[in-house]
Image (cartoon, rainbow, N blue to C red; front, side, top):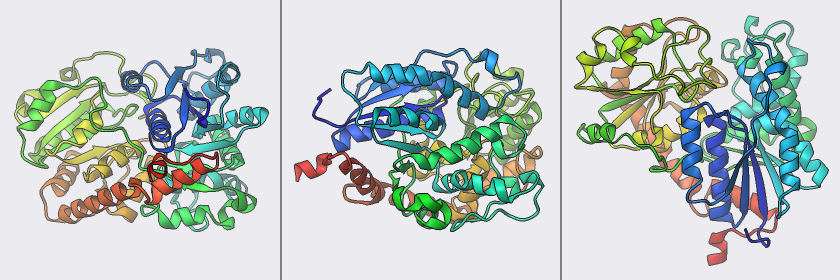
Length: 481
């Protein structure tokens, strides 16, 4: 690395939802804004998708990617600890390792950028006397809720889910009680106190980078810059919408050649892709209804399946990819045989961005993780919103009520099993019915908007350039000019 360049150190917490955007931010700082970058990863070491992403990101090597040694947190967690608690404890216990690793670096960092769960590491930047930023890998509405949570904590009495009126977030769309993020479901649970702590620490950085773009969430971004929401932080907390940062097409090291050969034979926009992300699983009953719904829809499909869960829908977050169970063991009897002409079953993991970018794919039934949403929008693919956990219920509302690029079940999948007839109806609406044409047109408009935002001189490019200028760094485009 050249010592004359600003040196960004980035920290990613476990899970593909955090890892992918942090890697892409690091790469963009290097390739477009003349930084050098080191990315520290607290990896779970259990997800096949996570290992694939890390492997493919190491070569060609634009950034130094360093996996911090795994920490033993077994004695610090209850057996039923929720995801937010588990990740928070992992990040907390990894902090001494991060401090030592940064102290041993030959080129001292110019700036530390942490993701949502890395907010406790901001104090390391304080100790080193360097600027510190938070990178939100989700959307602006989720940032607003996170920052405003300490105020809601004082205002709201009792459980959030028991309230009858929506929660007002200054300048933003209100949040219905049934849309609250998982840590807000039970105020006595440790994950609530962890999330509340993050909401307090978040604005203590020198700025927030967010994986969205100005035209996508203009009103919410304006609210984030207003003192009604940010209070005393409003005057000195710049917000940089730098997205959409997604994995480039062709970045996977593990493509299923047979799958893509099948895709190449299908008509344009005729295949619906079904995937619930790196950590989403369904109950056996819901999986059965989904299989029948796909079959009843009479549409072509690709379905990434993993064994059904017997507990909550996020139980596979640290185990997805483990176990090679045969899908015929848990799919309806005869389903694979009956649908093998029109459907493809992919066990455990698939190269999502490569599938979504294929011209034969015309719809995406998704868990509504923000990475998946951005990959769908940037490829002009409309969605069926099927939120499972985290902030995905908020994302589903954003997709359907604000952006108009998705349909969703009448009742949240987390509340009740969505039945086959409704699934078939949603699939047909997105894929072949006239009502879906407007949704398809809207998502293609947003695809163009996203491409424009990242282009030279446009909003997201300018936002990251403004961030880079803070460190005396002129973008490579400006250097050419």
